[in-house]
Structures are given as structure tokens and as C-alpha cells.
Image (cartoon, rainbow, N blue to C red):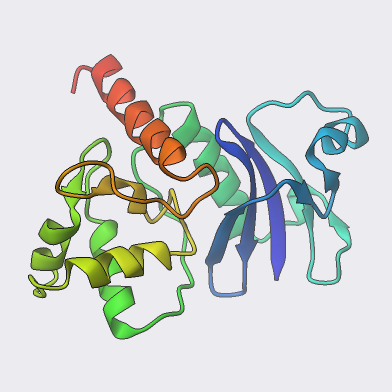
Length: 187
């Protein structure tokens, strides 16, 4: 297992890659490199977008050049995404869950950048039109947010929930960010 720590506009992200693919993205207040405000001092870096540091499964520091290709690609693609230059990701994923959860997560990957669907619409898209609550539950169990864009699924009467750090405010930020980028590109 390798972990990379990535500074984003929505907080510090810990990205985990097993030997199959990206298996987790989570928000952290403190990383293996230290508390967020100390990470940048340790690495003589300003808090800016992108890769900060990485560790292996034994907690040893890794250089960017030591990362598995897929994890390095993930940090590059997240940087491009947050610069408004990338609409979908090409990294390999490693997702563990039930067949139903995997079908929901697969359907999430089909939702276009900057667009939203309701939980009910997503349930219908996977052939389970009465399973909107179960779709919401599967969304909440998605361990690879942003790349598997669970933020693009909303309630029929509003945003609905979001299990990432910052909750619905983070979901709203991601949706607004994508819409604004589409507008800049004239799409």
C-alpha cells in the first residue's frame, strides 16, 4: 500500500493505492507527513495545489519518483482536475463492495462532468427504480470520491447529503466548480 498526500482547494487528501489501483481518497487533518500546517514547513513548500508527500505501508517517506505509476498519475490528474483542465480520470481503481454498490459506483462514472442526476434517476439507470435510498447508501460508501463522482448525485428536492469532509458544503463547492469550468469553456 502506498499513500500520497495531496493539497486541494477542498482540503488535504490522502490517496491510497494498493497494487490493483486507487482504493481510497479521504480528507485528513493530519497526514503521515505531520499536521497539515507543519507538512509544508517540513517540505519547504507553500500550501499550494498538488502532491505534498508520500509514504509506503511501513510509514517510510517516498519521493514522487518512487510512487507506483497509477498513484503518480492520480496526483497529476487531481491537479489537472482542480485546475479545471480534466473532466474524467483514467487511473485504475480498486473498489471493494457488494455487487449493488459496484453497479452504483460504475454508473457514477457515467455521469458527465458538471451535470447532476437524482438518486432516483441513478436507481432507474441501474435497473432498480425503487432503490433510490439504497443508491444514496452506496454513494455514502464510495471510498474514492471526486474520481468516482458521487457529488454529482442529488436529492430530488435539493443537494442531498455528502459523506466527505465539509459535508454538503464540499458537495456544493465541487458542483459549482465544475459548472463554472464548463461555462469558461463555453460548454
